[in-house]
Length: 135
Image 1 (cartoon, rainbow, N blue to C red):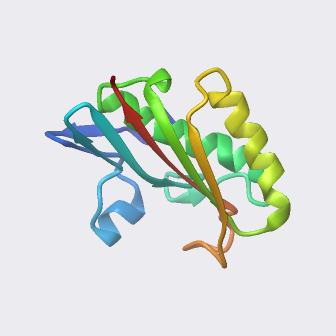
Image 2: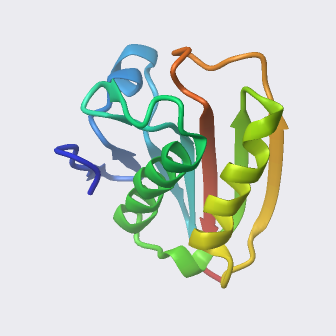
């Protein structure tokens, strides 16, 4: 669990209580059959962006939040089949890729990285989505 945030599973939805979920009306994750689809996660914990200026640590935090949602949805890290990440600076691809390799290197999910103009908070350097599937 990241910080004081706790995840709650309600039927086919997982909620973390994060500020953006309530404000923008979405769930942290949706469970559909044997899939868990996790919304984009950033390094926001208890309403605060963590590790400002550090794309690697922001990635590790975001993946921790995403993996907690996967587990609340009934699957594990080994079930992750897709990682999508969005960075705001080209120079962030390598630190984010390093974090993804450390977390998922033994799993080897499909992965897509995209550079974007910005995220909802300018202190956010990376946003990560994951999908897990039980075969």
